[in-house]
Length: 174
Image (cartoon, rainbow, N blue to C red; front, side, top):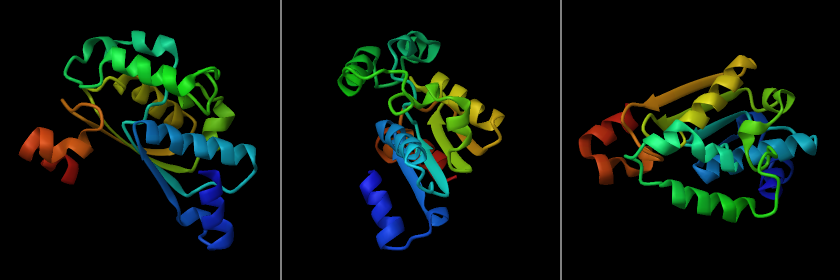
């Protein structure tokens, strides 16, 4: 991802402030990891982030929170989530911000792109960690717009027509 971003900026001369990096679920995690890696490399960061249901905490403890334990509407089960997290984390430190952005230091979070859009469902398994992550960004002074869709599951915008019919489509289009 870093190589592609650097090609856009350095070879194709896209101004970083005009680049938005977007990701859904694990892709949201990767979008944030890209920004943290660019910080470490002292490269210019994109102008903003669009994060749909970003998975920001892959620690074992994260699966004990209420949204994982009580949001039984979600199709992403605890067992599936744990298996995916374990496969992604492997032997890395799950608290490293490149793995679990929620655990980034304040100075790392405050240096993220100045504008972020968070889109997620109130009934998704990741809602607690996304709530906490979004609030940390706001508390650090970043400009964050949050849309926490009522009664929606993980990655609901991608499922709007298939799973929710008119209600989901209206929530996504609104």
